[in-house]
Length: 256
Image (tube, rainbow, N blue to C red):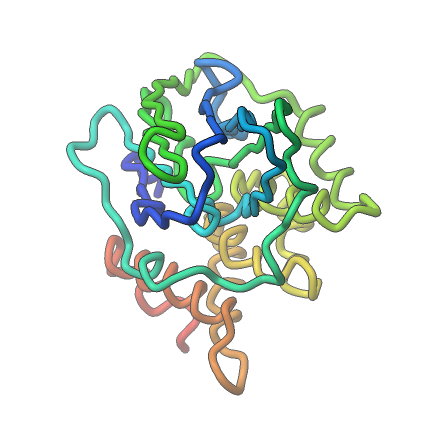
């Protein structure tokens, strides 16, 4: 059930107040990736003015901090923008606010493209990125997922180890990466996300990307919690609805 079309789910561009003294540049660290490898888009911001500037950051929802990121496979004609992303930012605590960017200094942010897009299938992809007001930063970049390459297991182990970091932002980044990649070699670890209060919000994505019989049952279980609908319930229901639409024979999973 690999889906070759990448969903450009960050089509909404939220412009936030920004100073003309800040310039930016988007870039990729390389042009070719292995299937199952995390793909990061980097943004270098430079304060060209005389005053310090405060810039909020949201690595999970780039549009909430003034960025628009759209990814499309070479074979797709137009990006698709799921309506659930159009309704606004999902609150998971306050936006990260790094120290003010001082004059003549720079800072690099990075966004995990796999988190909001399925880009595991071999082939070419385009990423179009914008930052803030027109002219601050705009790039259209191309990269390739090469089926002849292998994502090293030692790099995956590094992300697993990062889940144990004493730094909350580091733990959440590791959870985002692992949930987005959904490697079956760590299925037991990913299934445990639903029992971890801090990582539970990543469980629906992790189960969806795992795409095994066990993970689909776990995805269905997330929809059964009592009380008002939680973020995890809604996300799990959305993924199950998408699966049922594409594969009607699976529509009854977890409902008996």
